[in-house]
Each structure stands twice: as structure tokens, then as C-alpha cells.
Length: 271
Image 1 (tube, rainbow, N blue to C red):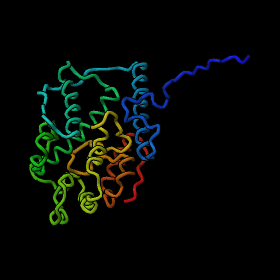
Image 2: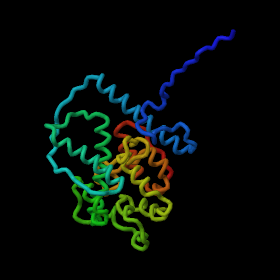
Image 3: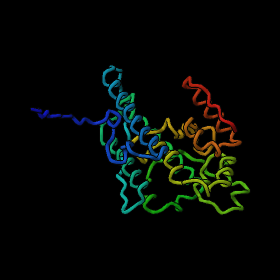
Image 4: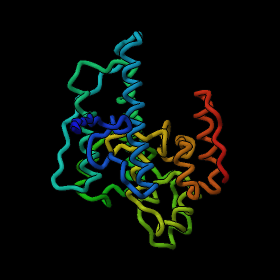
């Protein structure tokens, strides 16, 4: 007589999806290669940040209080765009730091990355202010983007002065805040092909999402945001948006100067 054998199996989650937080993070079954790679990168970045956080906890470091932020009122906004909502949440998180006695340095990786991205936001707002363009941003965004700016010059510096192409051609005003005239001209010639939301996300290195991809395709601002010497282009940004950097020798050299201070290899960018 044949005996019936009972088969059992155990369903376990895939290790590759350990960092997945929502359905949009699941790359399995996604046929679009670009979308699949984007989701995989997002999960890899989360895993990297988690490992770094665990390492920081297990490695004792000297810590000391060196700065106490001044309290600022929380900003509020009503119905806004998804980007404005994300920015509002990020700014609220930063504003909460004013409720604690002081910040402890060295900062955890998550906080450091957020502050670097926050600096880029401040830089963009500062350049908008210099050009007297703050009023052109949507009201909801303007309320949300309440942030201290860099000390700015009283007149428009040469690096932000409109080029003849800017003056003669109708264009989106985000182009005007780019700190390199040649970069603005490159954007003028290609803005019809640029996804503005995509560029905005990359400029702030993932500030609008729940992962920090600053090293992937972001920009850093270390000094005067109205001058190319204060900006640093990451390798990922150069790879994705290289057409905007054609002829922008000054901003490429500035990027390599900042990288050199960290003993990092020079970026090789065809300009």
C-alpha cells in the first residue's frame, strides 16, 4: 500500500528585501531595469547606513557639546506639493534639535547627511534671495522652506549675473540660481529635456526621500553658494548630469579641491 507523505515547506523573507519598508521598495518582479536598479540602490544605502550606525554604537568615541542651536518657531504649511511636504518634515526634524540642551559631536551619520543636504537647501534659498526671486516660489513651498540663509552680498555677484542667453530666452527660474554662468547656459539649451523634479531630488541628495543618496548623485555646498568655488559635485551627479557641466572648469576644480581636503581621488570629468 502506498503511504502518503506529508510535505512541508517554510516561507522566509528574502535577505535582499531586509531593508524594504513599503511595496515600492520591492524590486523582485520589476521588469524595468532602471527602476529595479533604483530600488536595489535604495535598499543597499539603507543597509549601509544601518551598518554604520551599529559600528558607531560599538566604537567608543570622545563626544563633547560645542553648539547649542537657537530656538526657532515651527513652520506650517497647508496642502502642498509632495516635495514641499517632504521638506517640511525634514525641516521640522531639524527644528526639533532646538528643543534639546545642545548637539553632541561627532554627529551620527544620519544627522550629518541631513545637515549636509539642509545646507544645499539653504544655498538654493540664498541664491533665490540674492536674485529677488523668493516670491516666485509657490506660497506653500515658501512657508515650508523657512530656513536661515547664508550671509549674502548686497548686490548680485558676477557669478549669478544673467547671461545674454538668459536675458533673451524664456526659461524656468530654477536655472537662475546655478552658480556658474556656463552651467546656466547648458541648462538653458537642454531644460526642455530635463525632469525638474528629478534634478531637484538629486541636488539635495535624497532630502525628499527616506534614504540618503548623497554619495550617489548629490551636490554639496561648503562655502558661498553664489560662487562655483563653494560647491562640490559628486561623482554620481557628474555621471548623470554631466551635460550640465560642459565648460564648467571652475566648479570641477572646486569639487576636486574639496575632495583633496579629504584625501579623496580627483574627479575626472570631461568638460
